Length: 403
Ligand SMILES: *Cc1c(COP(=O)(O)O)cnc(C)c1O
Image 1 (cartoon, rainbow, N blue to C red):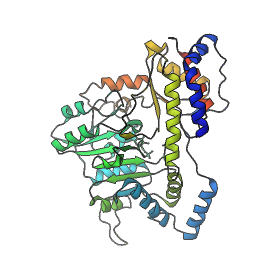
Image 2: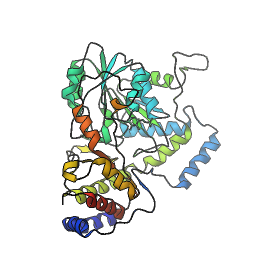
Image 3: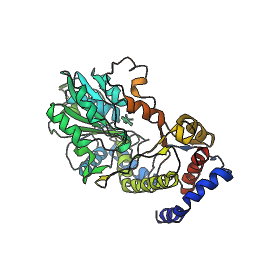
Image 4: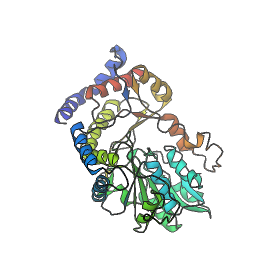
């Protein structure tokens, strides 16, 4: 870390020079030998995982609220400062069950700028998604548009902390309270984010977290619900285990969405490194921002306010074709030529997928459509080397025409 920081500091002064030099004198940029993906899962030392496996072998208990899962659950309770924690085999099932357990029906106001599972979870509950636009800074649901979309059938707002950026929490809470709607957050990207010193899970009636391998924090696969109403705990426990209350009583038509012991073990081992992963992401983001600050047509989200502790899970930029001289799609292809696999999150919008194309949408989704055409997530993960970031930035600079 110290090493990375100092390299970063000494390089700061030469940014402008590098821009001009790279552009006009065309330093030969070599493609990466191995592909650089948008993310890479952190893996704990394999000896630690083996030791944990030995414990599971000794227990001969592989799933169904085993001892490792119980330990994991207690750690997450502590981390999120609540007893209302329920673990699932993945985030999608967590959200599906969450919506069902809360009794959400009718219409739910949600965003088209998300991973498609947000909408699928509504669909599986036979809930009609009502898509409204996002705000342009952090791509989260625009509270100003939410109110206009409320109908007598609206029962909830399902907002997404896109890329880990907190939604407009106060505004959404105010609308939900005034209209007696449940406020649910898809916090799949937001594990570890705090606002005013409180975990992001503190806000709204319920938050879903995904611990999928591609997320900043993972448990191989996994999902978690954090919720305010103590009474929901047993409902979620029943729903994820076929509705079993005990050996002979089934109290509701549940499904199977339990987290197993191997997942919980991975979750425990990665949790120890969460702060370090966040810190590495912080350094990487600072470097991208510094290196690309002067490049016309490359725009970053505004710096977050000091009350937010961000998790640096993603590194989104927007490419303005006119200013940059190349479209987002062309830059994406250009990066691929160098073996860099940036991702167009979230393009296409959910509303453009075949299965949701026919959902009637009154909002014109102007901001979301624009962002979907300009957005590109650059690689960021704990061991992305400083000189790899340099090289990715050089490719971007070389691709620009405005300097
Ligand atoms: C990853 C993700 C999900 C789904 O989580 P899984 O654990 O993969 O099922 C839902 N919503 C968003 C925004 C996601 O990024």
